[in-house]
Image (cartoon, rainbow, N blue to C red):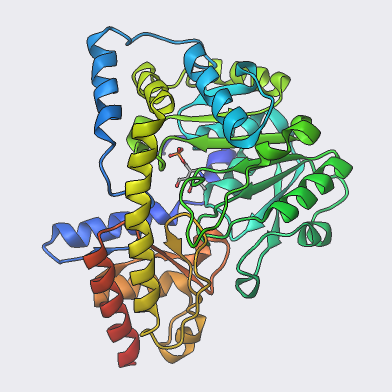
Length: 398
Ligand SMILES: Cc1ncc(COP(=O)(O)O)c(C=O)c1O
């Protein structure tokens, strides 16, 4: 018997190694081994109670039907208000599309903007799904490297060097997964000016916009709305900010015509984001006092874990890292261990680290940088300390 005849598109997809690592760590843990999991890409905190209750109330009040495809009007207005208040962007609800997570927002933007063979510049290291989303739209990702020595910050100069004259879009994520880099205001302005000169659209993913350290400031592309509104798609989500990954609630802020095109696309795929999640989102946006204090509580814990992870890293021989400015990952360079430990690269390193030290991490190869691995500190501080102790012992033995 032959199997189903899969499309070429799907056969060409790269399997997600973040998912593969998660599975291997879970299997090992299920067999009774005490695994420290630094592979996680989601908050380990519960959804704030007042948000969870809003979801329950939505069900009890029968808010369980389809909403407008582009999102409930009150939520679109609340998101537009967020960008007016925080970034001074003169945007309206018609500039907002509510989606099932930031992932769907980026995906829809790629589908609405790119044609087969279009060139899309993707800053690298990149979040695993960006190149695949460009490819699923038929486009060709071109990678624009950033360097650990520069704190992994993206620059317009690198774009100029790597992107071709016909480039149609640029994908940038700040604060960055996996590196934690935050794009500075002046550089973001240079990148947007560069996009304007080329007629390219910037897809700016700010999924981690509330998680910043050491006094760093997040600058959204929405801050340049007045000059560049026609060139910007900002994507964000409640997922990490309010520990709501399973609720699937995100959005895109974009020019009206693009929102309308993305909404048409969405009407033939997922329709609207969950009505229940949207009701909870409306409350999270409206109740700034409780929202801000729940985010501040989580941020304080992330900051302490980040310090513990960086501290623990100093005891691991031969690795170097740029302290992350945002998000909840550290992305150390570990390639000096490869020769000494006869490892072929980041994938084998993570496999052995899990099997021999019971520490799960994600190979940098998945993010376009095989010399590094990604460690998430979205895990309790005692686990962070224990995991780093095991890592140092494991690397020190060889
Ligand atoms: C950079 C980045 N963008 C988007 C997402 C997806 O977010 P959501 O769960 O809201 O779809 C993630 C999740 O890991 C991410 O790291």
